[in-house]
Each structure stands twice: as C-alpha cells, then as structure tokens.
Length: 324
Image (tube, rainbow, N blue to C red; front, side, top):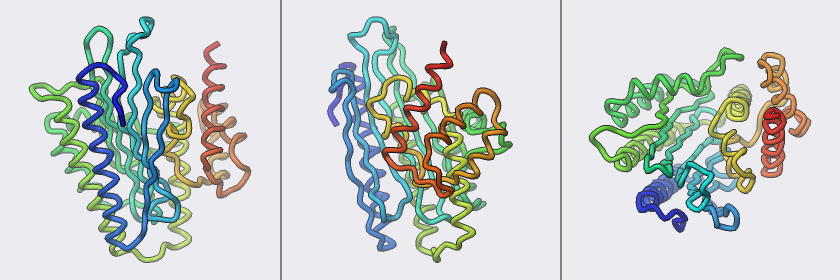
C-alpha cells in the first residue's frame, strides 16, 4: 500500500503496520494449513476522495475456510492541505478474527498513530480476547502476554480496556481479556518499536491459542453453535452502540463503510437483539430499533456486505439527526 501522508514518521508507521498486517495474514494461513483447512485471504483496496485524502487495503478471509469472519485492515488518511482540521494524518491497523469453531476465541486488535498539525502525535493501542466459550487457560495465557508486551503500562491498559468493553445496560462485558491505551506515547522508548513488539507478541500468542483449539477440535454441538451465535450478537451490540472508534469512523466519511464494519460476525441472533432494545438506555434503545429495522427479519440473521452498508447508513443518519 502506498503512503499518502507526507510526514516521514507517518510513512514509517505505515510501513510498520503493513508489515504487521502481512505477518498476521501469513500466520493465520499457516494455522489453517496446519489443520488442513484451506483458507484464502483476498485483498480489497479503497480510496478516500479518489486517493486525495488517503485510503487503505484490507485482507478478508473468503467463506468456507477456518473463519466465520476475518479482516485485517490498514489505512492512512490525511488532511495536510485542510487548514480547518487539527489532524495532519492518521495511520491505523484494525483487525478482527472470528473463527468458525465455537470453542476457538475471536481476537480484536487496533494500532493507530495520529499526527496533529501542532507537531504532536500519539498512539492508540488495543487488544482483546473474545471467546464465546470461556477457557481459563486461554485467558491466563493472553493476560500474561499483555503483561509482558505492555511492560510498565499493564495496569493502565487493562483498567481502560475493562472500562471500554463494559456493557452496563446488559450487565455484561465483551471479551475476557482487555487492553487499551489512548493518547499514548511510551516513556524512554520509541512508540513505533513499542507498537511493533506489542503487536507481534499478541499475534504469536493468539496463533498458539487458535492452533491448540483446532488441532484437538471435534465437530461443534448445536448448543455450542447457539452460544457462539448469541455471543456474536453481543459483539454486534457493543460495536454498533458503544464502540466510539467505529462510530467515529462512520461519521468521518462514507467511503469505506463495509471495511469499517469488517469486525461484524457472519450471523447474529435477531430475536436476542430485539430483547436488548428495551434494556438499552435512551437514546441507545432508539439506535437498536433502527438497527433491527435495517436487519433481515430472520432469527439467524446474516450480516452480508449489503447489510453492513445499510447498517452504516442507519447509524450515520441516527447520529446526524441527534446532532440537531
């Protein structure tokens, strides 16, 4: 992917994150080959304002392989000639992996570097393990990796992570292991190097967890499949009603809606989501209603690219109306 921003550090970060993207895609493919399940990733490119203000490239897993949904996206947008913007550029990697087998956990990661026109800059670093079936060993392994990778920032990152993925209205939390740093610049260390070693350690741990489940996997039961569907519904709810990064991405522009919602699983439980409308506070209950109206009226509800595009439009319209 070519660099859009002129800032040398932005180019360096893009090179780093593109390398992480390629590494993760390669390791996921190796994991698939290990268990003799053919998984292919296809590249999808998009441009913002025909490339005038950046764009991105993501790798998406084709259906029928190891994954329910898998997307690894790298993007870079910039505002260098727009004097009314205080941002200069933003370079990011966002990825979500939802395995097909219910006993294998999902993972979400986000690494971004934002440069401001005043010369300052900061990182945003996120990693969280999202199982539909709790596994104590997986959680402890992932937690230990976060602790080693984040060094002196473990307590700060886990505290903010637990807050970010909390769902107060449902008395639930998305995921079992969370890490989140916002406006972050490490002391006495280059932020780019910190992000690189953090991402690599988390990826390696997740690949080990994934392989451990698939090597010993037996065909899933109907009960396990239902529990996974219900958990994917919780993921859907948190991402579309509480995740500030997703909402901000949809409100900034509409030129990558399907990619912005690339983290959504392939299906959710429509009936379960309906019950959460009444439990949601104002105005989130109104947003849930709009989402339900947008979705296909099926209990096992497919989230297709076309549905993603319609959901993005519904979310954008909802917040634009609330602004007045």
